Image (cartoon, rainbow, N blue to C red; front, side, top):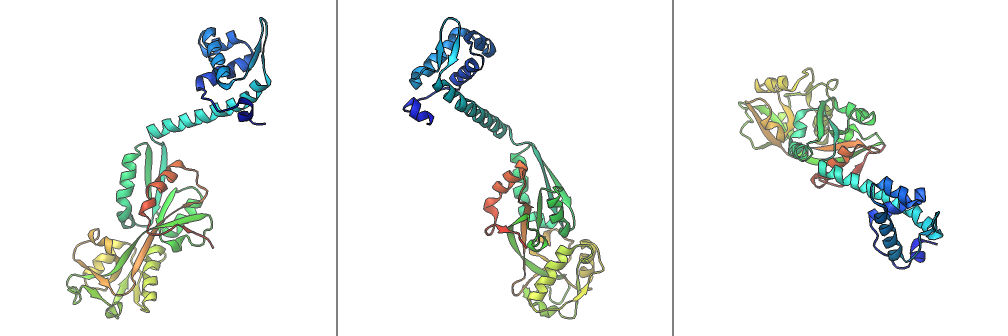
Amino acid sequence: MILPEIFGEKKLMTIVQLNCFIEVASCLNFTEAAKRLNIVQSVVSHHISELENELKVKLFTRNNKTVCLTYSGELLLEQAYDILQKTNSFSDFAVKLAQGINGKLKIGFPWAQLLYPIGSKIAEFGKENPNIHILFDRCIEWKIGRCLRNRELDLGFMRYDSVRALSDIEWKPLYREPLCAVIGENDELAECEQVNIKQLKGRELFILSKRYETGWYDMVMDACRNANYTPIVNEQITDVFSICMMVRMGKGFTILPKGWQSSVCPGLRFIDLEGEFTHELGMAWDKNISNECVKLFLATVEGECISDKVDVAI
């Protein structure tokens, strides 16, 4: 038998009434319940009487010496505790929403330029949630998945291939960007709007060593492979600035995302490549994450994703 069957049609009861009812039921004494609630006994009696009238049942049997719960009172007491617990949880959550969620959000990325397209969204999130401390950690791309697993990072920005084999990590694509051939401004091809990758045949392709940064290396080599182009690779250089300087001096070329052209050294030309030369950046996180800051950020960027969520599985 459930409460509506006993109490008839649903009535409006207040939290104050339920609090009074629980206190009287716990000590079976109206005077003691009033003391616990820091109100006068007549107010307690009034609330209990109102509650009984609204429910159309007796909750207590009373005489000059004793107070006892009725059967209906016992049934109501079971649900009253549950109602108040949920009400208190709701109130606590509402306060947190009003004050803003507190916590820390640690974001991993392989190189800073990858964050540029999503940077404004991260900044906006930080402004709207001043109580969340956002930290950035640059690390080698293949390590990001492991750090997510170990809870050393909360979010990671990288390509799908870097976490493809991790069944407990989810990855969501954020944006797709063209890759460009980068040459010196005095190069014979510098005035071209677009080139075929095979027009660069015979030139050295400068790229970060795979030992240093697998993400960029794999991104570029995958693009060349898809175009049936085998480059002459120079992977001895360990930093992006040096690569750009070598290209500027006419020693060869490199391949970079188009959005990087405002963040590298001057004296370079970014030339569009014919065909499907693109890279896709996504956001990864642990499927079992409990960090409320992560959940809030994921909800914030939901509309930014370029396609449906991808479950990263073997």
